[in-house]
Amino acid sequence: MPVECEQIKQISDRINRVYSSLLEETVKSLLQALGKLNRPYLTELEEKLLSLLESEVKA
Image (cartoon, rainbow, N blue to C red; front, side, top):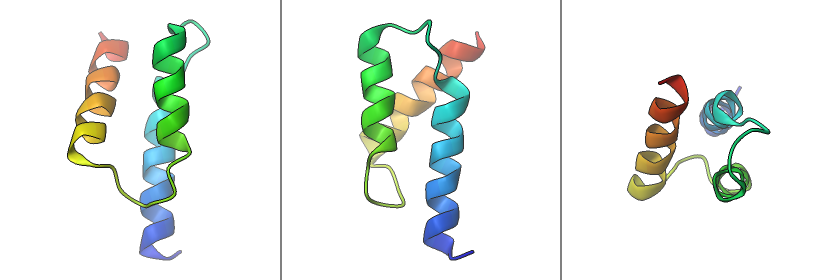
C-alpha cells in the first residue's frame, strides 16, 4: 500500500475510534470534515483538535 494511502487510513481509523452518535453535533461535524480532507496529513491545528477529542473520549 502506498505511503499516502496508509497515512489516510491511519487518520480515518483515528476518526472512527472517536466518532459516536452520542457526540454533540458540532463535534460530529468537525470529525466528518476531517474525514473528507483530500490529503494524507493533518495540519498542526487539525492534529491538535483530533488529539484533544481522542483524549476527551478516552476519559
